[in-house]
Length: 71
Image (cartoon, rainbow, N blue to C red; front, side, top):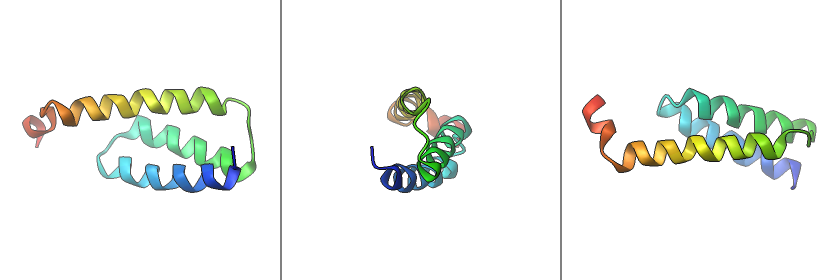
């Protein structure tokens, strides 16, 4: 719940998912980063849960080898 840690971790994740072109995950990480920066708490859990879903999609995409078909 530390706003600074939320900002830092979301910032790192944002850069990582951007390198894969995962723009929905990027947008959600950006939103969490902004929330951490401003210490906003409204919607934080909702955005975090949406980001977890997007990360699960990425894990599935890379875990099944689908990315190799699109490389």
